[in-house]
Length: 328
Ligand code: SF4
Ligand code: MG
Image (cartoon, rainbow, N blue to C red; front, side):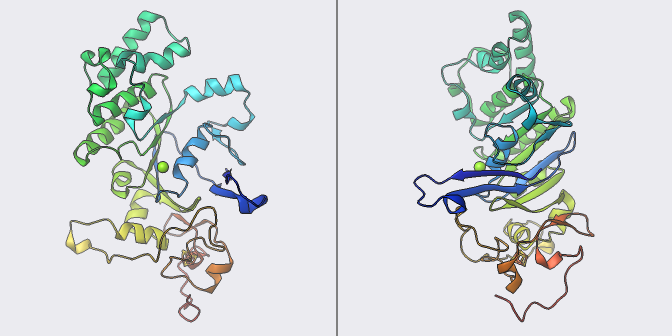
């Protein structure tokens, strides 16, 4: 709810807004139990920071995080530790996130040992069970991370995350470091585990094909804000925000009948420490008009179902006003 995470810029000369990056800037959305919400955006859009802030791995600058009716902000440290067990993270680089000196059995069982949950024997049994659930064999338990392929290491990371019986998992680019052929195996594993354990996922990725594969709903981020969010089928078949349209037009399509014209965006994503005024996308938007430079559009529900932050759709329908006159 109105989540913000601002970072001070090191060595900034000015106090106040000039000296901070608004990595997450007033983001609100819901995640429903058992679903996968995909978050897409270019690097620097704030999606990783969003994930870490939701799990309170970073303190939010402002806003609320409500988990099953509990405002995490209000919890004291002990309660937060308890609550955090239900919320786990899977990281992009399975190698960097696994301790190279620990054997896999220890790695997967470590969260349980730290929390002093279960006896040693129960722990061993649970670890064995988890290793099988993620598609590895008991021989894996005595090996070290470097003895595994990238896909297998991600399976180990998933087993470790599952050891706490979480309800909610944030996966930050979990398959981006993997070969394309291995990606779908790991995604399918995540989907199977979701069914088996009634998991809820926030799935962060820059890759729209990957997000399409796994998500029920999708949110698109640009410079710290959500510009469009809704059901996957609406976002992919009828993208409304010009940024979503541009992102989707860049995905190669196999079926020629559906081929979209590729929309070329002007320039690079602006520096997040100095985002453009008005609609932050106006410097690259092919449809920008005068008002876009001045006023920031809010997310608004559209008749087609999704929420969009763009002046072209202000009143819930496509604004047919001819903006070609004051086009910028
Ligand atoms: Fe483009 Fe204006 Fe819509 Fe922003 S508000 S996406 S600049 S048309
Ligand atoms: Mg990232």
